[in-house]
Image (spheres, helix red, strand yellow):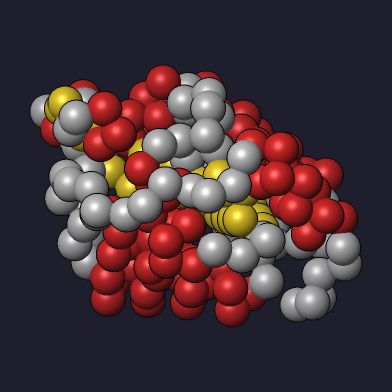
Length: 188
């Protein structure tokens, strides 16, 4: 499974559950945009490693809305403290999906520490999170059917889909996400 295959499954869950969806920096944002652009999506165009923290902040400020954040292994490695903060807050409405392809995909697929010895599922569990794992579209789909909060670590192969750039400026992305995130949930 490639990262884009995992994003397909996560986007479907977000759409079905009316969740707010925060995507991590770089190509994953472009992949989500090409697959399922909707006002519920926040495309993190800068600040590597902060999609998980932004997602947590949104979940805490909007406990009536489901929130999903997509983060990459490289981004989580850059902000591993977020795993402890997520565990200590443990909101029922927040799901963090870490797509671990063992590479910094947006900068040329250089290997990350997870391609060698670091196991992000164990790190997240050690921080106190409830952790689930998936390594195929089918297993991810099943996990996403069964849970609405916690951390999912998805093992994927390195590689980027050939997708276009996002055709919105940061102000437009932020404005439409803020408007969407301020309305009541349709799923409550």
